[in-house]
Each structure stands twice: as structure tokens, then as C-alpha cells.
Image 1 (cartoon, rainbow, N blue to C red):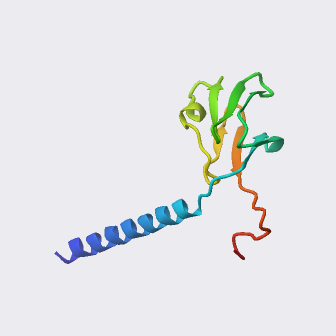
Image 2: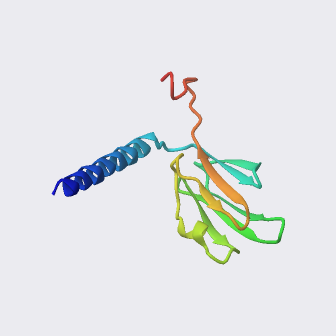
Image 3: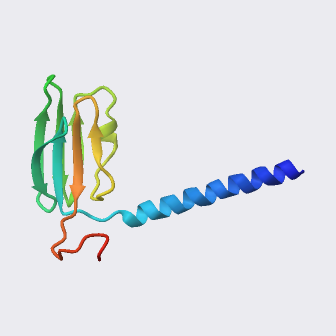
Length: 123
């Protein structure tokens, strides 16, 4: 009986920590105002999130991705990779939610650039 109580307390503690982590992560997300496209860790292009744009990006090995910015959100609409994880990710406008295509080594990051001059620590 005592062992069961220890396991219940341990699992309850893990559940509380998980809930606190999820709450913290959801609070740290903000809506971005621009998108940065990286391939092989190199910045290719920076695009505003408030303009509807579509770009086809070809990788070194011939693969491709189509990146679309529409209605203030960015998404991969097409990809040559077999698993299509990046396409199934869906659109995002959150800074803590990058979209990555590993086979084509492409990453899309949503960035928020504040005009106030304050960073997250001092604001």
C-alpha cells in the first residue's frame, strides 16, 4: 500500500511539472511580424508576415519546398520530400513554432521585432 502511494505521488508530481511546462511555453509564444528562411543554416531571405507571398526554394540536391505567406501566417504548401511532415505542420504565426523540412534542410522561423527597444528581460 505504501509503494502505491509513492507511485501516485511521483506520477502526480510529473503531471504537475508537465502542466507547468506547457503553460510556460504557451505564454512565451508571441505573434511574429516577419519570416526568416534558412537553408543549411544560412539566411536566404526575410519576408514580412503581413504581405501575401509565395516562394519556391530548391535545395542543393534538387529537392524543393514551396513556402506561402497568406493571411498573416506562413506554411509549406508543397515539398518534394517523401514524408511531408513540413506540409502537414500547417500554417503558423507564432515565434515559438518553427517549420522545418529536414530532407531539404530548410527552416522557416517567425520573428517578432519590437519597435519599443525593450527585450524580454527588461520589458
